[in-house]
Image 1 (spheres, helix red, strand yellow):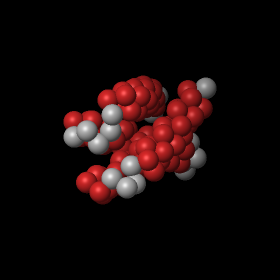
Image 2 (spheres, one colour):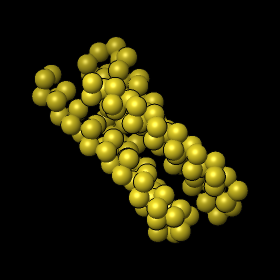
Image 3 (spheres, helix red, strand yellow):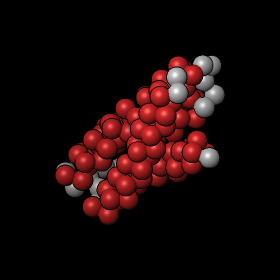
Image 4 (tube, helix red, strand yellow):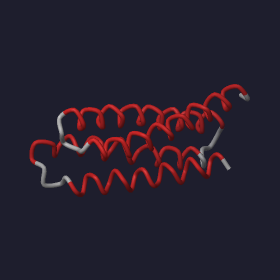
Length: 117
């Protein structure tokens, strides 16, 4: 159940990030920065999904750790975008909360996985 929730949340988050970047594609001052968040924000779900099909427990844990690092990077970019007015406070709040929820689930999953290893 936890895995499915994590997959669904991270997939929807990736879609939200893609939509944000698509809305901002004509933003000259932030164009290369939006490419950064596009990569990190979509990588979260890709690594979670890949981890679920890992070849070993260690591979599974590694993919979840990568996804967690991508969460932290995405949060960084969201904060930068908010503080430079590249995104609205409302957009920031929604995306930040979603990313933090995914991060919390990843941390919990990793603790359980490492404890049971």
